[in-house]
Image (cartoon, rainbow, N blue to C red; front, side, top):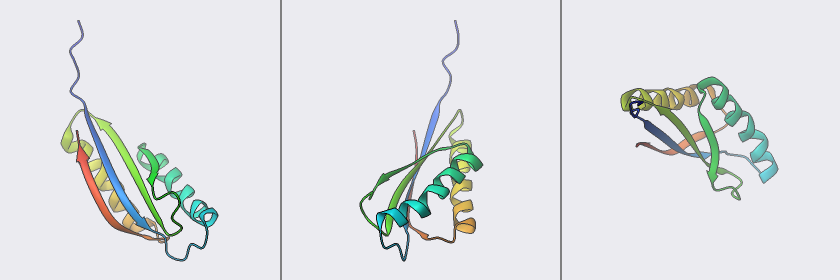
Length: 100
């Protein structure tokens, strides 16, 4: 019988500000490449989860699964750090880390 694996799920929720967006179409145009890049660079699940109707605000959630809570948290912190240095389109207003 297989041993039940130790499983940790980390979620990083980011409240983003996208200054200068004048429409939802422009917001999507600026946000879509970011979400794709985060998926590609970090192999994380990423989605816009709230504020879909706000022109200059977005809430995205990034999820990571692993066997060690410390590893999961460090991976998400790395994603957060990358966002801070490589994404000039906006800024992070608030963030929340959760590991289950």
